[in-house]
Length: 364
Image (tube, rainbow, N blue to C red):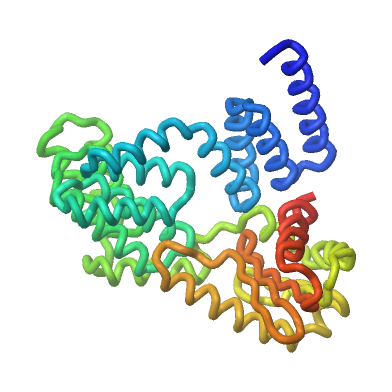
């Protein structure tokens, strides 16, 4: 890059940085990351993406910007691993490419490749671990017993294939401890001590586990179902930034909603809390939109349940079309946001406007 080009790039980055400083939100940070990618400043993009995701872990904008950044950063590896699968496929080739897609947060591709590797090479543990990691991520996010059970079954299959994988055994022991399956965790730590009898981390974990309260049942399915029940009662799930702010102060949320009046075709917005409770609506306020809220609560519940039955996916957004208009459902940090519009607006414009509202207006 020449001196003039470098000067111009620095000036553009400085302007993009000022935009973030003026109104810091996931949307503005994602715009800055995209500018870094465009100018080839991938190290800067990575630094800001990492910091942004720590600050706004629930943000769709930052997750998508992170994907684009990793894809640009790993372009050479992506090409090499794809070529390897095409020319000399093997279990590790599928594992490497699945791990790369997992890092890029392209979870559908990661699952597809890990499954293919598992089917073609069932005696290699790596692809079971990729699938187990992805399923456990969803369990941590949604706290559904079925996800936890499938994750542990996949991890156990990997252990059967390689009983001396230290990282795997330790990870599985900590997972069992987290869900209250003490005896299962102890069994995994003892497997580590069989081949690493002096390992300090394993010995410390074993000591902690032995002093912990024994579960009522050793049946893993029952333990996970009990964990799910306690999670549903609110004992585990932590509110994110948006939920914490607006559940505590729905009046502040209601004051934000009229900004959607500028959106072409806008008719109504209704926002429900993490448990489907009505927080705010516009126009007319929450009280005058109770009937609409009840209907939308059922729509969200059906969409969320349907998505959880699908492999890996969790419901984040969906556009429903009728003869008279569109209903756009978005889940943002456990807030359930429904925007209704007429059918004259273009679908992509509707998506863009709602996305900016959620990822920018609600955060500033």
